[in-house]
Length: 281
Image 1: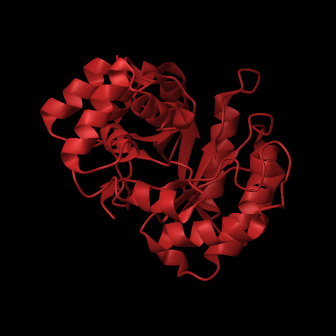
Image 2: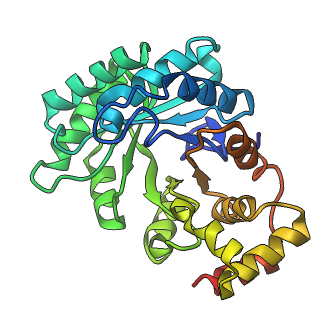
């Protein structure tokens, strides 16, 4: 699996990882597919998608539990495990408590990346970031990240840190969701912050357009045919075309996991990247 540098660190992470929103439930825990979920996570790792993203709020913590069950059979050092603290838990003590509870559910001594899931304007970023630095100091996370921060808030969070730095910002980014290109991605590129793209297939709508033959969908389908790839693989490769971007598509079947993994290790030409960008603008 192709890998890219994380922020300004020496660490490298897979260009295609695994998102787990909906695995183990959404707002509440769903145990109906636990066995298949564990199998899917393990297969993702076997395919090289060793960056696994979860959050305390996914399935009310059950997603973290399933990730923990799945990864126990692998060498911990081969994995990059990321989780997130919800925006109602951003007071100093709440951040520490949430991280420890996530670690218990994951069955880990530390996570590789701990993120603020969403900003909360009622809680000072300085207080939250002080807690995040404490987690690094205590060895409970290796790196600090944020999610759903615009350029202004990301800058404030960076300034609030004393001894650590923000390595990533997880945001929605796809052919059909491009708002982050205006300010946020250029800001991240200038400041050495990796963009982690979630929902890179637009919740299935992008591939659906290719199948339905919309004007922009036909462009995607034509390019896919020329490369001998699927529309989903072309769409994912477009997302990670920029060097500072990685992505974490969700997949729960072996076929979709293999398809996602096949989106890495090659690169759209500049001409085709621009054609897609123009068609989907």
